[in-house]
Every structure is written in structure tokens, then in C-alpha cells.
Length: 235
Ligand code: MG
Ligand code: ZN
Image (cartoon, rainbow, N blue to C red; front, side, top):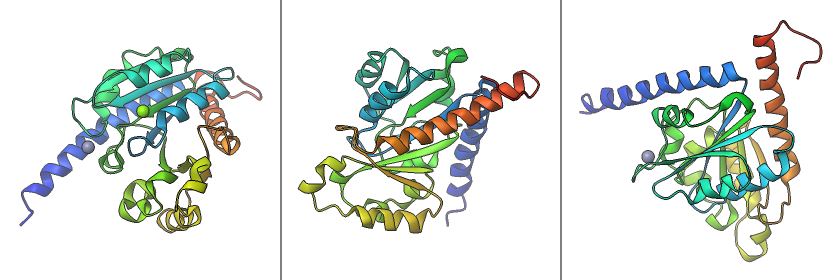
């Protein structure tokens, strides 16, 4: 009988959801668009951040929260790009949660930030279970990992708004079938978008960057609307 265990799990997730919604309120008050970037280790999350920052930093304020078991390598890579970055070390923990984000936010000056990217711990399983207060979840899969991952780890592919299929420059050297990834993810998540990219060559970045810019624009309008009476052209 699972009668004893089930309520415990539910309490953890409920407590997390409460913290996540506090985070969300904070983001919305500041008019910041927030994404939770998830993938297995080595799919290219930090490379995506570097390329995205290079392309967008002149047009918007960007901050990054990095989640890793140990080390601050990734936050250091991001800081070299001249944007604010905080590193969370989970000390063996395999996902970020709402409380960790709340603590990390104290180290960021959100006043000039339009886009906050949270890079989750590399793991295709439990990061999908924990809301952080983000507006959208992004899942990344590299073609080197194989086209069977959406079938084996469905939840993370089900709940994302965008699936980034990375390392398409490696396609000639793998047996990965991108059409199969698209087909499975369409079945799991009919409304989700799929962008094929290479963080190494920059191929395919246009649609991804446009999507981010559009979302940031929508959230800026929410901020403008909350701060001042609605106006025609406000930014
Ligand atoms: Mg990383
Ligand atoms: Zn975990």
C-alpha cells in the first residue's frame, strides 16, 4: 500500500509550488521573462547561453542562474560574457528547486534584467518535476544522445514549450533521426516548438532568438502596464 508515501511526496511538491509561485510573482513584478533550461549533461546548455548572450546582450539585460552539483565553471564562463551570473551548487542534488532559486535571486540585481535564464542540473528526469517559477521550460537534446530519448524520458519532452535539438553539425557522424525526434515530441507535446540548432556553428539560431525576443517583449509590456497607465509605445 502506497498510502503513507504518496502524501509525503505530494507535500514536497506542494511546498515547492508555493515557493515557485512566490518566485513567479517577483519575476512578474520586475517584468522579467524567465526560462528553465533542462537537458542531460553535455547536451550544450552553457554553450547555448554563451551564443544567446552574444546575440542578444546588446538589446536586453540578461542574467543567468547556473545549477551544478559542484564547481563554478559554468557561472565563470557566463560572467566572461559580461552578464550577471550566480552559481548554485546542489552538493549532489540532481535538480534545482524553488527554494534554491529564491536564495540565488538575492545575489542578483534584477532592476536591469529583461531575461533570466536558469540552467538546471544536467538530468533528464527530476528537473521536469520541480517548478522554479519560470514562465517557460526549454528542453535541449543533442543528436549525439540518440533519437530514442523522448520515448524513454517522456515527461521532460511533454512539458517544454521549446525543444532545442542541438549539435546538428554532428548529424553526418551519428545515426540520429531528427524526424523521429520531431515525430515523438509532436505526439507527446502537440503545442511545443522544435528548433534544430548547432551551438558550435550558430546554424538554426534565428528562430530560437526570435522566440526569446518576442517573449521578452511581451513581458516588458506587462511591466510597463503595471508601472504606468497603458500607453501606445512604451519601452
Ligand atoms: Mg552547463
Ligand atoms: Zn533530482
